[in-house]
Image (cartoon, rainbow, N blue to C red; front, side, top):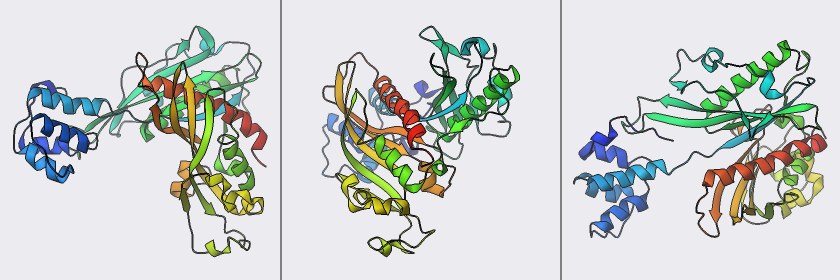
Length: 373
């Protein structure tokens, strides 16, 4: 999210300063319309190119400026989760095995970077469980090429380590909101694994297990992704429909009759609509080995702590969609969420985290079943 300038409480921008502030994405068309209507000004066009000149030619009141600032603060970065595993051979708890004082800045090479980790974050036990530890951190990025009001951004991230009593492995769960938080969590994760190996908690020959695009055959990847959507066995999520699918034809071999029209013509195909998993691409299993499915967005109903609503959860390999990187890692994120009744007394991001963790638990179990098919 955007970090406000330290002296913003002493500023009441006008003219070009105000224009630059209102042009930012966190200020919506409706926000500017509300200010004008509260002034008794009604326009037949609410687009910014029409409303911004009106407001920038005047002076905002302190309360109006505070309203726009609140629009900025209410926009949350969408968290994405990556889960990895590695075998654990020690009887020591994770909390006792972790470094007592983790100097995160000594792990990172950020001398010539335009971002930094805020403060000195460290691991704490969650709910008093020494085999479930978590480090929350903030990354602050400064971009002087941007508008004065948004040249600093703060992104939250976290790294969790969890070991179940009946398992001989630990889960490393990365929650990131930007490339910088993903990088920080990855570097800390690798440093921790090296520390555990040096202390004898992890065998030196073991590697972190990642759910990569390349760990599946084309048909296995389709089965796997659909197992997290239409075949989900969650008790708090109820599958409704698949609303978005992204895939590309695998042209390493000639495409079979029926989809041969994509040969040398289609690089990527994105389908939006309803019941997309029932289209011939996926209902006809003879096509599966020729399709590289890398993204599935599904609508679910949810019921968490008495709060109900609908959400769209995205599962897949987004880096493959961008760069065709075969080592793209599996990610899960919630693209949208709405409540039947607006929640009170609960943080919306808390519900998101519960839903993401629900998919994460299934993600690991299903990978062991469908990976490398």
